[in-house]
Amino acid sequence: MSEDVVVIDDAGQELCAYVPDLPGCVSVGFTFEDVTATIHDAIEMHIEAMVDNGEAILRPTSRAVMVQVVS
Image 1: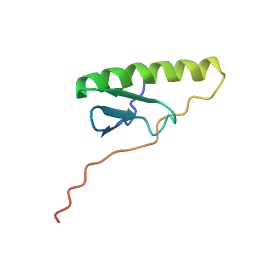
Image 2: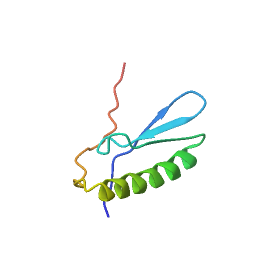
Image 3: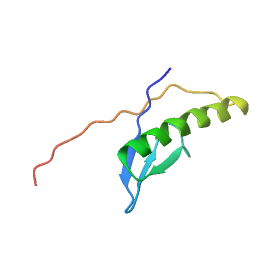
């Protein structure tokens, strides 16, 4: 089991999620709950495909922090 950084962007009428450590692993949803569930499934499928293709599964290296900037 690993923990992956997931970035969720507002894409207008839906939310888009992607995983920096898994290029090409993306999903969408209309709510935060939807996109969180779909990216979870997408990560599992992405890693399964990597294993099936004999690709190395590297440990996640991305980190995320929230930075508050007063403007």
